[in-house]
Length: 77
Image 1 (spheres, rainbow, N blue to C red):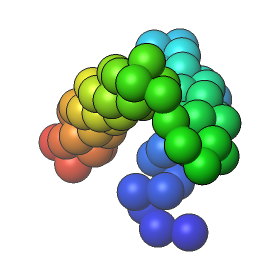
Image 2: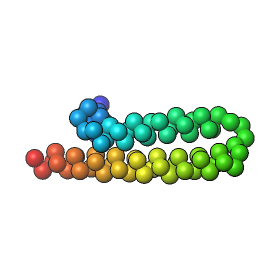
Image 3: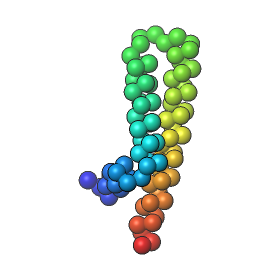
Image 4: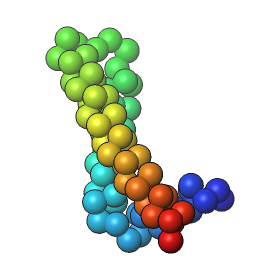
C-alpha cells in the first residue's frame, strides 16, 4: 500500500471529520448508483443526480485538503 493510501487509512481511524466526510461521500455514491440504475431518469432524478455529484465533489475536495495538510505535517516533523 502506498503512503498516500496508508495516510487515508490512518485518517479514517483517527480523524473524526475525515471519517464523517468519507462516510457521507460513500452514502452519496450509493445513492447515485441507485439513480443510475434507472434506464430513464425523470427530470427530478437528473437534478438530484447533479446535486449529488456536486456535493460528492465538495466532500472529496475537503478530504483532499485534510490529506494534504496531514501529509505536509508528516514532512515537516
